[in-house]
Amino acid sequence: MRNPKVAGRYAKSLLELGIERNELDRLREDFHLIRKVLQENRELRLFLNSPVVNPDKKTKILLQVFEGHLGEIAKSFITILIRKGREVLLLEIVENFEGQYLSFKGISTAMLTTAVPAEEKTIQMVVGLAEKISGKNIQLEQKVDPDMIGGFLLRVGDYQLDATVSGKLRAIRKNFEMNHYVAEI
Image (cartoon, rainbow, N blue to C red; front, side):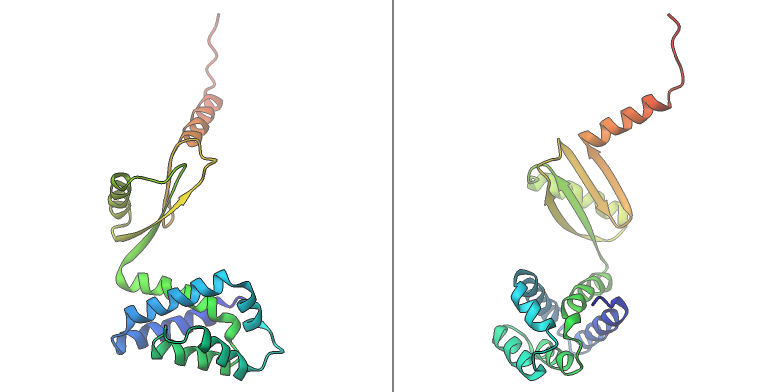
């Protein structure tokens, strides 16, 4: 059950609590771990989302899974969330928290898609370009798409720079289609 409004409120409250207690970066690390574990373990997500499992059992198992790896804020948050019957929103909340954290820190995300993994020199150039476009610090995510013929695709917010071979071919095709000039023989 997706509920972005509620997830956003929880994430905002956690962000403010992290700032207040000077544990924002620790909280972000905890949420990265929670997100990774939940995304990789379908059974755990199903267990957490099950309405027939007792909330106390959910709390106990989840805290055992993360024992020794989470700070006090994250552990208390999990306990409260389950007690309130909102555990189905846990993954959505931690994802929303990441967006709010990046916004708070003035960091924008960019997605670089290439046919092969990009070299460090290329990555630095792309980060510089993305920072120029957005006016913010950039956290670059990379995606390798072997179906891409060559070049790269860069997305920064709503802006997209298509420097792929297929993109260039599309532009040429469109140009030819728009050309109404027919040479006389």
